[in-house]
Image (cartoon, rainbow, N blue to C red; front, side, top):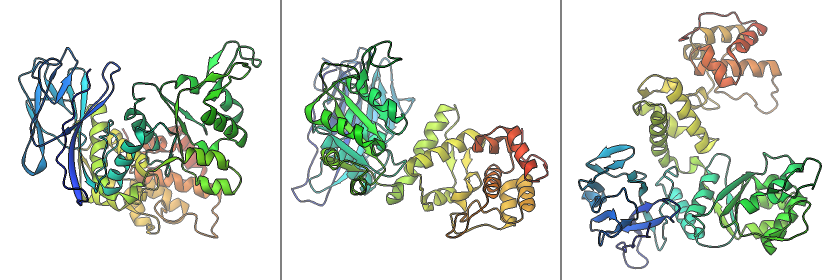
Length: 478
């Protein structure tokens, strides 16, 4: 695919407050590099290579000569119109003749995917269009994140991605890779906390045959596998000091040796590291090397927590509802306004990952076409500090949950503060309250509650008996 020409977007004079830009991000096809087309006020034609002066020219035999056109509309909205193409134009999985584009819309033309994006930039910021529609959001923190990704992607330096658990650090690393000159190369990920310390070195650098007892053949490490691409080292704060020294040497010399090897191997991989730890504090406490910290800190990217960009929650909810509904073959459901209010009021300590998991569970387990407040987990409906009464716990949990609450002696505190300062609960109480919480979330359905708890239904019944809870009717049980 030939990289299409880029038309200049209309820009206000230098120093102007804001600029709204519209972009088509052409994703890689058959190994070709991605390309970004900035949309101006004129229509943008999309067609096969050799078709003429279209704004987006694709080297794709399944694309018609004059396949489609993207047209500007009222209030800055853009519409895509199929031009009677042979194989059709698809937007978000549906074949269309004409469709209005929304930020994150995915257009499929032949074997090519094109993502439409728009953003309001401040000052002289330049925004690289996201190549992955999973990075959803148009809040100021999200736009700033997109802009930072676009700025650092072209720089051939290590990148350190910082942020809380669940904010999407891996997606940011993928975007840095896709938007960089290395976008055609491999993206290799290694979670440093998921590999035992005694095996991590061999995962990083590989080993020669005979290097140790079970080394029956030579094995490449992730540095070699990421050659000409990007190596993403997740949870780098968990790496031992000894391995940190070896990693620093590779970053500085661009060479390493496999375990048991005698030959230096030159490495050509960009390193993107991520952590949810405060590395500056780790340096002060002697748990992270200061020289490695400064080597990685050349280009830091701070990913904002979800609570700092609450205006993105509605878009994320819609995105995940549509995605998981499509995966299970269901019509995309609606979200009740009160449920959306609860989503937006919740603090989301687990960030986007927690939101994603909540939506996935609801779509998979609930048969209704609308997400309502009663479908939401108790901690969202009753945030910490609100607590609940036996009556409300029973109402939420159905018959089985009511019985559990009464037998345990006290209200269902799934939404309350269990671990208040100076308050230590016996382990049996914690287990019982976790069971109550799961039953309340699933309105007494023991099968679903067991799935949430990660145990079998029989194990759940056994534990209820151990805690002296008589089994009542199984509410909503199939």
